[in-house]
Each structure stands twice: as structure tokens, then as C-alpha cells.
Image 1 (cartoon, rainbow, N blue to C red):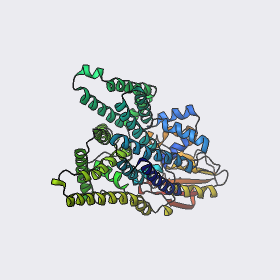
Image 2: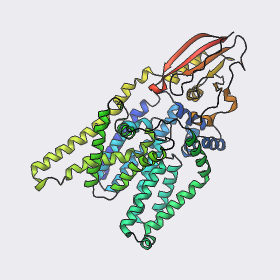
Image 3: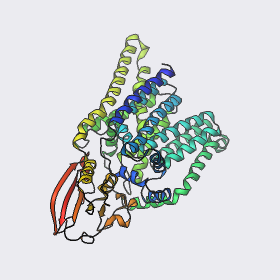
Image 4: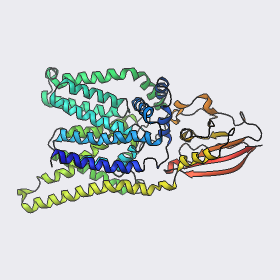
Length: 510
């Protein structure tokens, strides 16, 4: 297959998947984190950066999204389209990375198609968060690293430093990816120069690489104080559950299937998958001759090891943060299948033995493609999105029902921001917060005028009050005062079980 045909096939797959994603892009209701993205970008630039620093993520995604929204608006379609664009770029970047790293256009096409069709990947393409931008930058920086080490000149090292710095300013988990790249650089320098430090000093990659990492460190210094403050509040309290023995296998299950299987019930699926992954990794590492295979492996295992180490104090281990390892996981799994055609365990390589292994390889290729192709549609069908309109329907109901002068109170910060994004009632909703809120509930976006601590402080006899509550994550349903009489109530189920139902109730004060 020549380069032109491979590119045409890749773009056909991208066009097909993108059309599907655009058709269903706004079917799911916006959720808490996406609402945070949307509302944060409505502040002026200086205040946006300040409030981003009060949260737990770096600011680059918000800066770019603000520019995007300034041109195309902040409709849900526009916000999510930004992620779609970087999802497309990530797939293209992966094709270029594999082609450069392993010199095989067919393998590059196969792995890129696996990423484009991957259910876990598509979930984040359809979400107004920083994940597809981060994936793109991790792949791009890895591509520049391979180029820089190959050509040993400063322009490629500069591009590496810039893309790596951008990645760190997108999501802190990219730190682990940059560390993995650094470890690979040291490994390659050791191979080229041995363990003699003087030889390292004369090595061009050591010289340029040191300069690149120094530039990365310098570029992060303006944000360092904010980062340390964010890290301190995360270590003090965070919502992520503690790890257990099944955490890592469960993450790989989600990377593979998109999360459509209950790992707590089907433990044997985790066991089979774990054995399969370990076997495939060993086989791929044994059969693939390029030393760049170690870069791919490090980009998978270093983020896991880093997250596990940090989680010994306060858990930061969250499945979705490992989406940055997904492209490289697919490379190694795809590499194991691709390497079957070169199986050297068969003596004499007779025609029939070669044919037999070629058939095995082709069957696995088809299974991998078909499995990826159906995983997202199956998951989408199981979600029953049309029956679970969540906050979009709740807000639409209130936009039609709320009259001027009526009050809107929200019982949980985890639905306050989503309602605020959809709110067109003309009334300012207020979050009921009789106690201090944890930082991870979105306090970076809250001002005193957003809060109410006492239901009696603003109400008079005969006032109409609308109360919005959730049965899902952050479930806090405050009891209304005795002099509130419920007039009507309506609930709408949200997509995921942990999001529960969004309930809007109308009260009259007596």
C-alpha cells in the first residue's frame, strides 16, 4: 500500500466517524465538568485564569476554548466540536507517529483506525473537556521526540519542547507522559554513549535534549505557584475513591471496550483481559525490532506507576485520566497482531505453516476492527440516551414554567452549573450552601451572590420557589421549610446511574 492510499483510507474512516459523532453530538445533556468549561470561558481573560487556578487543572484548554467560543459561540455543539477537531488531529498525528517510528504505513493505518473507532476515545471526543487536546499533544510531542533524536538538530527539539510544555499546561497527567519520554531519551543516550558521563556530554541528543527539558521547566515556572496550591488542596481532600486490586485491570477494560461491561460482576473478564494484554505486550516487544517500542511501552506504564505512587497518600487514580495512554496501548496490542506474520517459532516456514499464521493474523485483524466498530454503537444503544434527557429537559421545563419574580434554588453544586448553562428563565439561580463546599464541587466559579445559606433570608409569604435537586453524585437534597407547600414536581433521568435523576419541584411559601 502506498502512502496516498493509506491516507485516503484513513480520511474515509475519519469522515465516517466524524459524521456519526456530529449527528449525536448534542444528544446527551451537558454535565458538571463541561458546564464548568463553558461558564469559565465567559469571564474576561484575567479573571478566567485566576478562577482556573482555584480549580485543579492547568489553563491552556480554557484559553483555547475561550478563543474558539469567541468566534463560534458557546453553544453545546460548538463547545463539543472543539474536542472533535482535536480528536481528528490526534488520529492523524498517531498515523504520522507510527509511520515515523516503525516505518510501516499499513500498521500505522491499522492502529490509527483502531483509535478512531475506539469507544473510550469517542466518549471524550463528544465532551467539552481537555482530553482530546491532551491526547493530540502527547502524540505530537512523541512524534517530535522521535524526529529530534533521529535528526539531532535544534528545530525538532524546539518543537518537542513547545508541544510537551503545551501538554503539561493542558492536563497534569501529561507530566507522566513527558517523564516517560525523558526516560526513553536517557535509554537511547545510554545505548549510543554507554555509561560514560563524558561521552554523554558530547552526545548531541543529550545536549539538545537537556536544553529542551530546561525550556519545558522554565515555561512552567509562571504556573508553578498555582500548581503547588492546587496540589495542596487535592492532597487535603479529593473525591476520587481509593484504588483496589482490580483498578488497573478495570481501566484497561474501559480502554478496550469503552466501559460497557460491569467489571465488578464479570471478574473473570478482567482476568482473561489481563492475561491477554500481558501476553500481547510480551509478544509485541519480542517481535518488534525497532527500539522505539520501548518509548511506546513507557508511555503506557509510566502514567500508571506515577498515578499509583501519588495515590498512596490521596487517590488521584481515575480511569478517564489514562485516556492519554490509549493510543500507545492500541499500538502495542495492534503490534502483537501485526507481528504474527513474522512468526519465527515455525521451523522451515513451510507454505502451509505460513498460510496458517497469515490466516490467524487476518482473523485477529478483522476481529479487532469489528470489535472497535461495534463497541460504541452497542454502548450507545445500552445508554438509552433518548429516555434520559437529564438537565437539558429539566432546564427546558423550567424555562417554560418559571415566571418573573419567582425564585430558583439548587440543592447541589453538581447540578447548579449545568442548570446555569441552560438557564433562560431570566432569573438568577442560587445554590443552597449552608456549609462550606469542597473545592472539587466547582467552588472556583462561585461568588457570594450565587449562594444562599438560609431559605428564610429572601422569601416572603406567597412567594413561588423552584427547587432543583439530584439523586446522583453529590446528592444533597435539603428539606424545605415547613411553610413551603409543594405544588408540582417533575423529574428527568440523566445518562449515567451515578448522575441519577434531576428533580424540579415548585413550592409556594405560606
